[in-house]
Length: 455
Image (cartoon, rainbow, N blue to C red; front, side, top):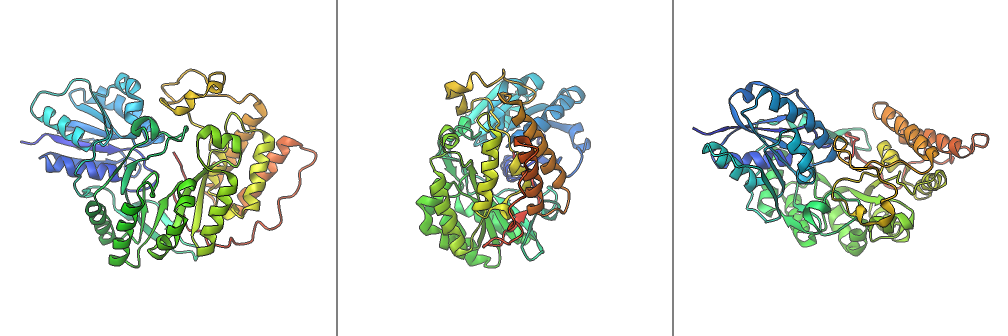
């Protein structure tokens, strides 16, 4: 008789969970009876817990991990006999705290085989004790089993410039990253390595999502061009089989510059949007983050993308210990100069530097004087800005961004409001009007996902 397993995800940026589906496939292949639940869509269903021997909680990101905290405590209090395994990127880096909450096993990296091992031990009546694993071994994965998850239409859609929306699927062609950006949460686990997913698995996953109604695919790889040959092999075959299906990817500025010759083929195979972690226009901050690109190189990359009609979705870390009111205004002026106002998701104006456990930012001697002790509840090292005016500005900008996530205010209108509060912080008696050309459409029409959150 198989041990019943409940797999839970709490939040994943508005997409159906690849990680949960991959874990379910591996466990079902091993003989487990698996129930999956996505708490971002539905409340926790208690019924499957009554006869479950193992609960797996997926924590691929910071927000998901914080949302998992009360769930672990609740499970431990109400179902003390259940073995709890927390798995995903943020599991190992927060192991001590998760164990204090009640987690029995903690898995990060390539977690599928570890989950099967935990299941086998629980099913045999010999639960593993204090299991903790970071595996970077390339596994032969199963095709993700998405049965039991909410339908794709329940998740974020892609809003097209002409006003229609596309149902979005999500898959991963690689995991990890070969870069070591200091602020990146992937680095403490993967340490500069990345692992490819077999192309046949990726394509089978795309195929089943298209059959389920997807008309656009998000590739969730931390950097789609970590392995350019692998990436192109997949999108060529995807486009050949589904020429009407579009896709978006995430690519580092440095990689776009290095592989600029590949952009036309990405565009020709259906890529309509590239997310790129620009992070800052300040050269000193880019060096602290070890981003390996300059603003001048960024401008060259943006020009190359614009030339072929490929839209960019820029992401930033706008508030850091080194941000000043002046540099924030410089940031806004640069957004205007580069024609990125319509590209900016409102939340990107209010991203505050997060320093998780194991962050390479801790290598910088200047960080010691800036950080407070690690806060296990916040899952990070908090910091306060040396200038209280900057923290006040952050609060004002965040309030605008969060309020406008649920409104129909255009991105130009949101920018104008942020422009005003920034200049009020600099000099309340001399607030220049926002630049007059904000309403002009960008050279490349910008599609965007309707899920606005970030981390």
